[in-house]
Structures are given as structure tokens and as C-alpha cells.
Length: 338
Image (cartoon, rainbow, N blue to C red; front, side, top):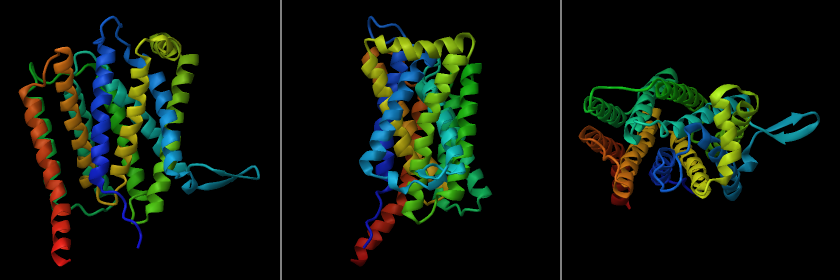
């Protein structure tokens, strides 16, 4: 009998476990919370974290031995394992998601939870749109979870002191992030969500083997050939951050970023509808954002999450409970028949 794949809830736990330290460390490093070490500019943290993610990707896929599922292509008389056109494009979208996610936690004045809810809430809205476009059935519990998740966003925005505000760079960052997710989910839904585990593995590996190399190449090209402060910041990131006394923490951010990419991708590739998978993915990161903010508050005596963000997190927990009910009831029914 074929071995069942790990439950989506194990992937959600892995995503949560990586996201808490990833977002907290990114915020602490770029806010200058470590005594005697100056804050790292948001763009300067990207090169080293991208390189660490690249190494983490190759180590992980090699460890689970999934390279063999990559599509074979004939190139100049040679047989090479390379992504297809569509997984390559999905990988480019994922590269944009990786960069904008890290940058989201570097904007001063924007809390982790607020940025998490903006990004994740946007993808929650996208999920049923993708299901509609791909004619995928959406179950009742997915709609309830989506409504609870969107309610969490509404409560958070209503509770913002002084009303909703967002800097222009942060808004651009979120916009690129959401476009990346729209492209990624569209390709996933058409090409990877199936009962065939090899299809899922192939898509996952080909997307991952594109994303981090593409991100490193893009950042390197921008640093070498770009102009202005953006190029200068990236160049400093490639050169000067190696001398940072907290280099090991910067590298850890990159490894944890790759961990969120691995577990987050496996959640989204589950064969069920996006209106189910996306709230599982988003809920994990929202809860992680709350825990990260509370942790920073306790360690560095920073501001705790406001009331609206806490209520929003509780609504997200309710969404997770609703999504888990069908699995729990099915397990109970199987045990009753045994």
C-alpha cells in the first residue's frame, strides 16, 4: 500500500515554526534592536539572506532526494533536468514573493502583525478568484474560514490608531507580493493540484530550483549595473554585511525564509481547493506574526500588538478550527469503522 503523504497540518506547523523567528529576527535586525550593532537597511539584508536561502534550497531538496523528478530536456544534444516554461515563471513569481516578504518586515513604523495581515489578507481574497477561474469546487467550510479570516482583517484595520495608513514603499512592496501570488496560485491550480504525488513533487522542485537562484541573480545584477541608492544598498549588502558581528543571525534569517518557502509551498500544493489551502497557509503566518511581535515586546520592550490585532488573531484561530473539522470528523469516522 502506498505511503500517505504528510498531513497539511504538519506542513502548517513547520511553516509557523519557521515564520516566528524569521519575522522577529528580520524586524529586530533592521530596527537596530541588538545593543552595539547598528540597524541594517532593508535592502542591505536581502543579498545575504537570498544566498543563505539558495544554499538551504539545494541542501533540502538533496536531503529528500527529489531532484530525480525534474523534467528532462534535450539541449544541444545533452539531456538536462530543467524546469518547464510554466514552473520557471512560477519560480520567478516566487522569487518576488521571497524578496517582498523579507522587505515587508523592514519598514519602520509598520508592525509585523499589520504587514502580515495586509499581505496574507490580500492572498485570501485572491484564493476564491483562482478557484473560480480554474472551476474548482469550494467546500462550505472553506467559505466560512475565508469569511472569518477577512473579518480578522476588518477588525485589525478598524483598530488602527489614527486610521489606516501605509507608506508608499510598503504599498508597492505589498502590491508586488500580491501579483506574485496571483501568478503562482494560477499556475499551481492548473498544473500541480492533483492526486499524483509525482506531479506535486515535480512542480515543487522546479519552482524552488528557479526561485532563489533567480533572486540572487537579480539582486546581483541590480547591485552591479543599477544606479542610485537602491543599487548602492544592495552592493553594501553583498560586500559589507559579511563583516557584520551578527552575520550568523542574518544567515539564519535566510535559512528560515527558505523554510517558510518550503512548508508554505507544500501547503499550497495540497490537492484541495485554494480557498481551503490559502487560509491554512495565511493563518499560520498571521499567528506567527502575533507571536513574533509579542516575543520582541518581551525581549526588547517594544510595543505590544494593539487590541484589534489580537482580536484579528483570535478570528484566524477560529478559521483554523473550522478548516480542521472535516479532517477530524473523517478520522473519527474511520476509527469508528475499525
